[in-house]
Amino acid sequence: MVKIKHLRHPFQTANAAKALLSTRFNMWRFAAHGERRFRGDARYNLQNVTDGFKSRLDDSRDDGEILERICEAYIRAERREQSVPETYKATEQWQQVRQRSLRPVVHALLTRDIDGLRRMYRNFFRDPCSSGLLGAPNGMSKAYFSGAIRDVYRRFYLSHVLYRIDYWATQTDRGFALSDLTGPLVGNPFGVLIDGTFVRVGAEYAHYCAYRVGRLLDAEVATVAEIGGGFGGMAYYLLRDRPKVTYLNFDNLESIALASYYLLRAFPSLDFLLYGERELATESIARADVVLMPVFELANMPAGSVDATFSSHGMSGISPEAVIEYLNNIVRMTCDSFLYIGNRQTTQSISDLVSRESDPFRLAETRSSGWHSHKISGAGVGGAAGLAASVMFEQCYKRSIAVQNA
Image 1 (tube, one colour):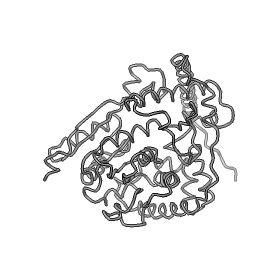
Image 2: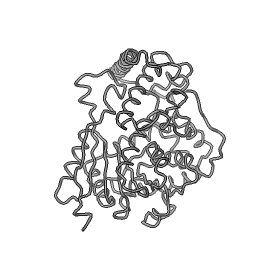
Image 3: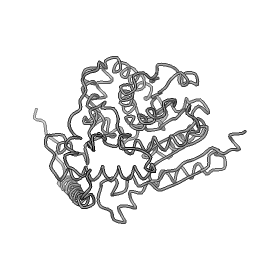
Image 4: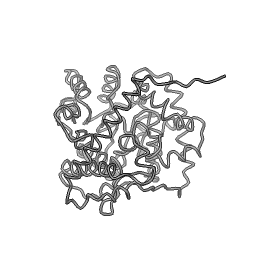
């Protein structure tokens, strides 16, 4: 029997080619813009990109026990996810990522293929197992991970990173040194090497988020929950710089599995609680340093169990019903503050829901966020329409004093 390959419609092929051409043109334009902008800046050295993309694969530690533990938690959560309410199930977009890029890692988790999982996780910054969370700039894995990187791509990435580092410095009141962005080499990260400091991709934003969350806490001993924590980038800096904080993360199954690997490797001395190991209750949370759970476990969080809840885009792309469900859980479990970073539509929706008279939270602060602007993201060199489309907001909600004292 002859198999007939599926052929793309000519219009699909033309559209894909047009999109690729547009992406490459924007990269070239931004690379040229960055070269002009950072001319004379000692940091603008293309070798910094070459050095930053060198492999840092670490095969020295035996992580078999960690991987077995992650597989067990994933299998339990996968079985449970099949019967949870629709508001907690993976979005259609994430289901597509599962079916395409994540199929090998899902298979390894479900079959306890420890060797296969180890190969993927030890290289997750450069492996499809982190699709939806990480990847080469503009998805160009071949351009960045297959030998010498062309100058146009090095100029693009270096300009992108320098803009973001400068923005990070201003947003944190220049209170940190570049070395504060240093992180673990778990997962073979890529980035840039500036003045001897390796800055992995996304480090500046993750550190900024940890900085913002830390400023919400009134005491050294506190409990923080994150919704949609990805592979654990923000969590690393928060746990490193606030060692008395208990951290909880709620996310989709594959992201929680990856975050478990990253944080367990980064903090081997901390006490972790994964799904199914103990019941999610006040006592078990108090015993743990880090709690990593599938998002449907939000429904089981004890009332008033966390001081602050944080989410960066963790409620974007979910249904309106799911936004309401998530927000109800946040209101119930959070004693003091809720910080959300997201697009205009989601932040407005959350603001409308919180503003209801029955809600015990009030909007204490709102600001526009430049992290996803054209210049900071590296998507182009600006333009009113592009900037308007990329505007994000940071909103901080506080529980009212009257409710706290009730």
